[in-house]
Length: 203
Image 1 (cartoon, rainbow, N blue to C red):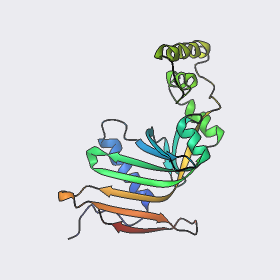
Image 2: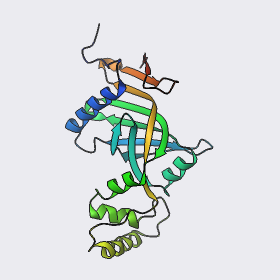
Image 3: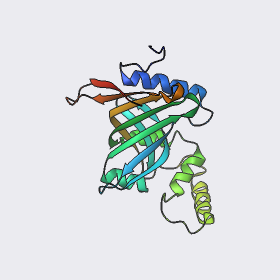
């Protein structure tokens, strides 16, 4: 028996765009939240939530402190996996691929699109480093705020940048009654063109 909302076997970017639009309309908080999994060159994994800040056929973009744990792991082993879980829609998307750093102009543009307080918080943070007390961080935040308040923006720190994941695999999952879930996986053609091979997977 066919299902009217079966996962399309056509272009995965079109399906992602449609699902992401649905999530933006339905999810109460952060529909662009995604789990980002990285690993050391020795294969020790770590995972955390980040926010998707751009997407298209060239990849999926997020921003971070490159001196953080994830930034260090990305630069040492630029392979990663993303997971979107839209609970209210009972859908998931898994994406795997390689990471490249965005151009400085792109990082500058996004950094200065953020609220001034968010710029201050990023500039004041040694992300992932030990902190002796929250008061220390708040004092640094206040110092940075006072320094740049008249300018209305903070220079983007050199270590604050973005990364673009270029997908080699995209998998869509949706809930079905009685746990008869549906999964469809897309693999980019080895020729490096825009072609994708696709198959259903057992749930």
